[in-house]
Length: 391
Image (cartoon, rainbow, N blue to C red; front, side, top):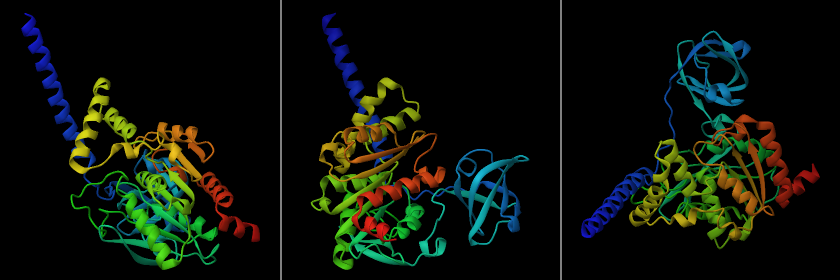
């Protein structure tokens, strides 16, 4: 009987280990492939349009097109910016808007939301002079958008903007008007596996563990080509993780005067746990499954999950940061952002947005977001402070 019991325990351990190995492999299959840019379907019907009054009626009663104070509506005819509150109108909602590109939609057209609002090149959607430049990256050429304001704060300070996982170059466009007012020229960069950018040989994304080297290449490009000496780094979601990796691992992190982290991916472990919960995986299985997925992912890709726990390693940071996060974020958990802010109150200004989803802080309350960003940059960036004092 004792031998049978022993073999039963051994068999159970083997089966459990095999199950976790299979589960870890499956989870790593979801984690590692670099995602394509988010491309929602055109599935919201336009019920009525009143261009002269700037009004449009949509057949929807939930989601970004209803909830966000500022949101873009893309149709095959063009892009409309919707703003203000949505009001009920028959079976749908009515919103006020302004035509940005193309022509107004017509009744019966289908549209989709554009969270980045000004989706497209900044010269098309914001009227800002934009140059397409190529950053020589470790893996090959990386396209970027160079935007220079009418009046610069100084000749050596640049903002570098990094989009999130599955995002695109236009994701940070929302910030460009304010950066221009503050006299900061900007470079919006792509990272490996983006469309038209150099691809990782295996096509995998590593949540900032290697992509930070593309940010490093962009900073080096600005030094060599533009004569830049000081930098403001801005990252959305995974782009914020890229910024945090740069701040912790770059030999040139001293040149960064300030960083802005929007809905940041501060902890890969916590993010994987949240995603497992959303998939309704049983709670007792989540911790071992996530651990197995991280081990398998490291064996397959070399990604070091420990490099992606930025609150745990907050002692390595030395750069003032503005960190914003919505408490309704179902993509990246908010708790690690709170932990990072609590770990480094000497560096982090933390702004939490109630009821706001992932990377939508600006859309939900532009006035608040831009006031916080303006105050932060004026206080932390010498060139911006000098321009503000002179104006």
